[in-house]
Image (cartoon, rainbow, N blue to C red; front, side, top):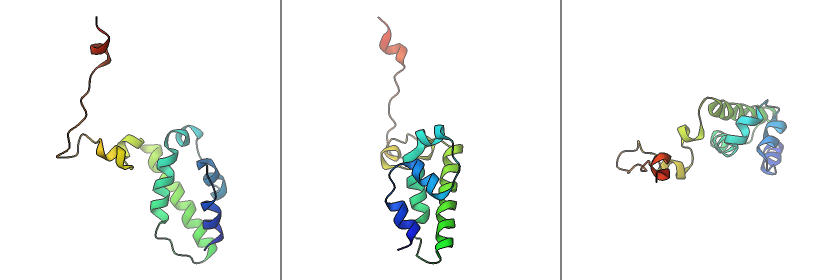
Length: 109
């Protein structure tokens, strides 16, 4: 296995991925979308085969940059990357949307 992939496997915080790959980030965006960014990055590099180390590092960097850019432009709710969010998508045909009850209806006496 590639040394960079071994290194990435041992990281635990999203910020560590950005630092290891030398990708600039806004802490506010990462704090909201960290799991989504890492999952999307993983999807991008899932089919990565070991090869030239410099190319592998660049591929991982590009995957992280692309994932970060996606969540810079869209929220995790809009993207619906995880199953729990997909299952709650009211625009999916055949699936009932969740009922909305305004807070004002709950607080009237």
